[in-house]
Amino acid sequence: MTNPVAQREQGYTDLVAHGGRELTEAVAVLAAGDGPLVAHGPGGEHPAGLVLALTLLAAGLPHDEAVAAALLAEPRPAALHEALAAIDALGGTEPYLLRHGLTVSHFHALRERFAGDDAGLAAGDVS
Image (cartoon, rainbow, N blue to C red; front, top):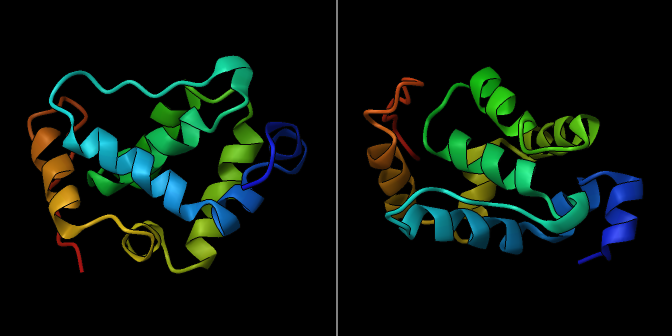
């Protein structure tokens, strides 16, 4: 994985290309938790907004709503948009997370967790 300075300069596309396992592990931790979701990093050096977007997308939130929520935690909106575009180019969020170790059980846990959320998260199919 690249250093935080390089991540800030290059956006998150390098992180998406080479840090998929780490991003997926963060989403898995949030899927396994039973308390409030908290993802943060000091000084914008860590991809809290990207982890939040991936978590919300895995939970079934529509893309626009997930991005809007994640932007609240992301000091670099362009980096988030670039990263999500890179993930889309690799087949989309679900295949990306599955390829890097998220399980169908994690997807179901996130969708169950958010099923009653006011945001209207839908429990969808995970292939």
